[in-house]
Image 1: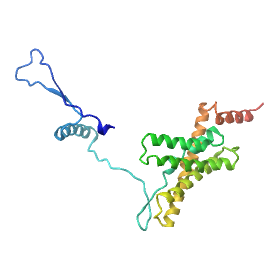
Image 2: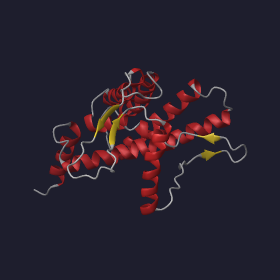
Image 3: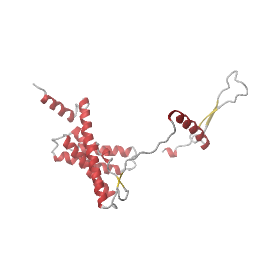
Image 4: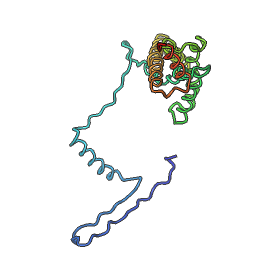
Length: 231
C-alpha cells in the first residue's frame, strides 16, 4: 500500500568544492525527498512547462470524449465501446474451437482485470461470466462446427446483447424502457463490430503468422489450404 509506506527523510548531500573554485562561489546541495514543498514543486514544474512551451508551443490539452446523447434530454447513452471488453470470448472460441472455450477465455480475462485492480472490483468477474455465456451460446448453437465470419459476428452480437441486458437489470433499473432499449442496441452494435468482427480479423491475422499452427484454428486453416491446393 503506497499510501501507508514510510515517508523518506530528505537526504541532503553537499557537493564537494572543486580545487581552484573562487571562494565567492556557493556550493550547491542535492536533496532527495518524496514530499517536496509546494514552492519546490512549482520551481521544478515552471522550468519544465517553459521548456515544453518554447519547443512545442502553449500547452492546450483538453480531454476528448465521444458521447451518444438523447437529442431531447441531453442524457448520455453508453454501450458503443462495451464490445472492447467482450472480445476475449469470441476470440477464444474462434481459436480453441472446443466447448466452453469462449466462456473460459472471457472469464479468465475478467479475473485478470480484477487482479489488475479494475475499478469495478470483483464484480467484473460476474460480468465476465454472463458475457462469456452470451458468446458461448452461439458456438453451441452451431454445434462447434462453424467458426466463420457470420458465427464470429453472432457471437460478438450475443455477448453485447447479454452485457447490455444484464447491466440494465443491475446498474440501470431506474432508466425508462426507451433508454434501456437504446442501450441494448448500442451494446449489440458494439459487440458485433468490436468483439465479433475484431475477433475474426485478429484470428485471421494470427493464423497467417503461423503462431496458431498448434491449435485448432491453425490446423483447420492448414487443412483448408491443402484442399484448395491443386493436386
